[in-house]
Length: 418
Image 1 (cartoon, helix red, strand yellow):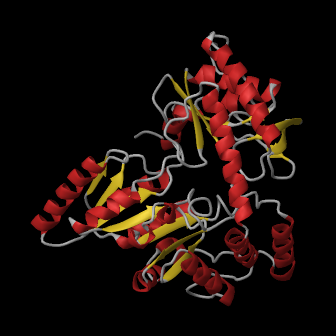
Image 2 (image 1 turned 90 degrees about the vertical axis):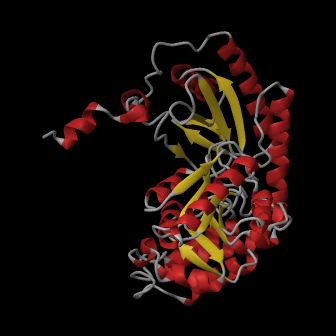
Image 3 (image 1 turned 120 degrees about the vertical axis):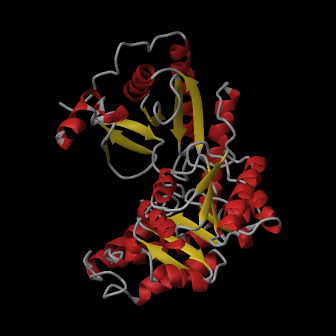
């Protein structure tokens, strides 16, 4: 019999294998200072493009005031216990009511975290005879939720309506053969890596041909897309066709928690059957009150969303004008595609941070194929034109070095904490 610990030590995984050189720099870096477009990294000032603080609310004085006062009044322990047992309050229910109204749904349920929330929601919604049809580029939390599903699942090519139709046909045939079960379709409002919107409107149009329900994960669209910030459904004019709307507070609201909105009878079912909430402590009161304030500002201060889009479009146009490939993004998420290995990517990142004062995140193998690099830039309302100009200049100069082979190294630079 093998020692399970010995097996883990022998193979730390594709990312963990670099830990001795990467920890504290390429992985688990420590940004310091007030959250914003400019922070400190290892004592140096850097322009930061890695924070999902879309509307710049993280350090807004009105937000800080509410967060601080709520913490003083309630502390982090209140309410104590799971909501079903002893952790429910009027404020929790008020936040659910306001979220449902904003998303034009009958009801909503609060979730402690987005990742665990949508996993557990999938588990609660689907039984072993049900079939799930999902987009190939769905977020890891959806994929992990699918692992909990005991029934069949069919994947369709990313945003490919013809393949989606094909997989729905397969799912329908299986349901008919079984004589029981239903179909849940899962996709995203905004795909957080590539920045393109999910084809919600086209998917919903196929409800006239097939019977299914749609769960949309709109973590990046909530608060950023649509005339009012309602999300991708509003932007595409199809919010009514989304049966269950999911989002997190960790992006546009710069907070913790998530929610699921939909028909009251279904949200009630989930409320009484979602294991990640039934067996977990309720969201602390300061988080709930802080999220109420954030939602109010999201709804009543369109200038925050306008500034976000000014910055996003300026950044994206500047990158395109300088010959960079940003893919098919039609949201504020800004990927920059380049060629190179893990070693080259980390050497380039080090140059950007150490010599140009630009802090951004990279995506490399095994998340994407070997030989490819994606820089994932997250513009926010807190960024300035000067931040954008400095970043485009830095990218142009380092890209020239990358193409010239200046970053070809034997191994990733050793930048681990001493």
